[in-house]
Amino acid sequence: TCCFAAKPTPAAAVASEPGQDQDLDDEGGVLSAANGADATPSTRKKRRARKGKRSAAALQQEAAEEEARRKAEEEEAAAKKKKAEEESRAASLDLDEVMAVSPVGLGRRSRQLFDEVWRKFSRLGQMSSASATEALAEAEQAVLSRGGPMCEFTVPGAQDTTVLVVGATSRIGRIVVRKLMLRGYNVKALVRRDDAEVIDMLPRSVDIAVGDVGDPLAVQSAVSGCSKIIYCATARSTITGDLNRVDNQGVRNVSKAFQDYYNEMAQLRAGKSSKSKLLIAKFKSAKSLKGWEVNQGSYFPNAYASGSSFDEGIDASFEFSEGGQAVFAGFVFTRGGYVEISKRLSLPLGSTLDRYDGLLLSVGGNGRSYVVILETGPLADTSQSKKYFARMTTKVGFCRVRVPFSAFRPRPGDGTQGATDPRNFELILEYIKALPTGQETDFILVSCTGSGIEPNRREQVLKAKKAGEDALRRSGLGYTIVRPGPLQEEPGGQRALIFDQGNRISQAISCADVADICVKALHDSTARNKSFDVCYEYVSEEGNELYELVAHLPDKANNYLTPALSVLEKNT
Image (cartoon, rainbow, N blue to C red; front, side, top):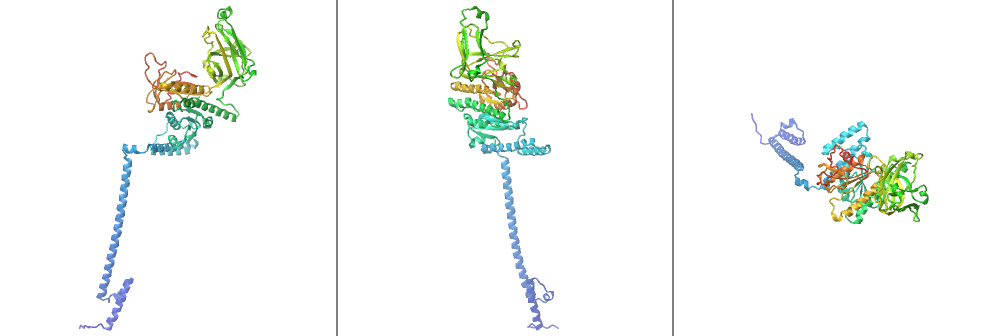
């Protein structure tokens, strides 16, 4: 039987109340199975509507998050693409873009890399073998990673040698500095200014001394701690004052300061510098003339005794004048006649002349020529003695005359020169010293041949250069004087070189080749006490051939300087 009721019965009313509780519980997350079974259709519709609303909100949120992720990925991909394009563009710079880069910045960066790598190499000698191997591998890797060249030019013992480069910013000086550093030397540079432009020309590891070569105090400070000197400075103008200050007085100041520094170091060691001159005689008072005898004679005894028309008499004296000078004066009017002063000297105990290269005389002359005679042998037996002769020429006024032992010959000079020319003579003597010898050169001077200089200024330039060369020869230091032809800015080692003596060359030479000669001469025994001209190989004109046309090709693997200089004369 079916029964329909228009109004809810009390039981139905009671059942609807738990359904409302279910809706509340469902929102709160608690579900009652018993009550849900009794839920009404209207309640279920409301629940489905709320679920639909919640699903739409979740979808919108998910869509927003997906859009954000997509935008982030697109931005990241765009950034990576831009970076790759920049790296590709940097790796494929064309020539115009490279030239647009500052060359000063590139040079500074390259020097920094070189200095960094070189410091690592220089420390290897102070490490143990195990640590040295590790450091070597590290240094090699650093060099290779930067694409730099490996060092193949290191000179043994260079780390213990400090070279002062005077004129380090000159055309030759800048190349000399880098060649020295490449070979492991400690480099000190003397420059006139320390502004940014000058500093950028030199590597950071170079010790810079600021001063002018015309200032003795600045030069004295610069030479302190140095073992050798390369003088590349030259006057920038042809004004007589500049030429004398740089090319003449500058060389005098540097050589004197260097000699004084070695003497000071020797005194601290309670010894004597190997570069010090040996004092043989000093004429400072009338007492110092004691033992000196005045003798006279003739190269032609028969003519001297026959009383010929040329026998006009001989007279001479050696006295200490009122002006405080030792004066050897007189006249020789006899044909073949001569007068001499002599004294037998005994060297200080332990001193022998085999440690010396020659004699240095400080005299005030009148332009005449004189003959220096050395007599060797035991003092007790004069029959066993031997005499050696060498001619020297004086100037008007005081000068220092260098007479190398290699110039002495076991026979007298040409005594007939000017035999019929009656003349007076006067020679003021200050001192006689012996010049020390050595194996290596101490001072390298870059001079010039005069070729390529304008004719109207050549004479004054060469006069200053020659005065500086003479000052260096008389200093007692081991010297090497390089006279290059006209300088050119081009790579070195490309052409053969001619080494000559006699001021006859006229061809050019690159600055790099001159710098290489200076660096190689530092430890070359054949370069000591030699002056020479150098230029590119060429064929001489007919009638003006060189007596030694020997070309030497510069090669970094071989020392071309030794065979080139071995045939040249010393003390020239």
